[in-house]
Length: 318
Image (cartoon, rainbow, N blue to C red; front, side):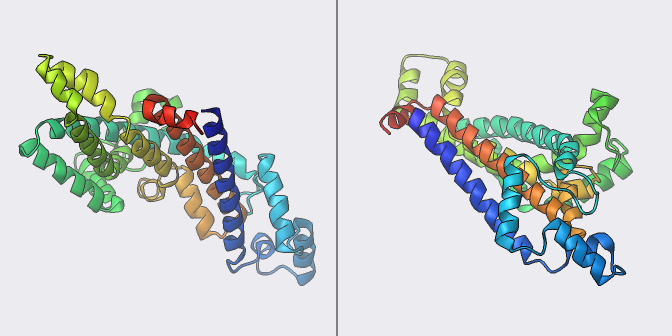
């Protein structure tokens, strides 16, 4: 087990290193000059050359990459050209918004998926099963921005139940905070429910078809005990991977929703960095999101290993 954990940590570090190299190399190919962006188009050639020298832009790109990588290891993500402040500071300032949206969205999707997936597996080929399958298709097919616009028009403008673009931090009160995030979180949850529901339903059906489930019925156990004490607990091991990766994806995939609902999160900051060609800020956000995804994947793998005795036994031999 210890060897397995060490291997997973090493593989995670390798992934982060490879992504850092690809990210830096690709962004180096983007047209534009960072010194020109900072000083403006009216800057003289002498000032541009002086700033390029101070920023190290006149050195070979591999030297620049190694210095940037060394900064990442020291948690120094560089300084944003656009905001003239620390990239890590900007990320930390925007992180609570994106984290709140991701956590609430995944919780909504989990509750709906577990309820519908479990009932759908138990009541196969009934009306509730067909309804659940429809939810899978709708959640996977409808674009997030289109659902967001419908929510704004109907729940925001027509019914006036929720604010359209007025984000309220947690310091303003829990109810006010949740109310400002209700629409964007629901919109994101709809998009995540399809895959999670499919995974939970499939896993639940496989579990219910196992021999030990038939043995439990033969012994006269009540359906409530069979479903909630044994079936759900066993069936949830497989979907944990899906839920974990969906959460990791949400941490870096809220650009559309944050733009539609004007949320000051990481997604919107990423969009601003792209629009303004702030390469240092863009690199920092990409690497931070990569680290979150890799770390989440590592934690999910360890949780699945602890919950699944077959994996534990297999890793002992590695």
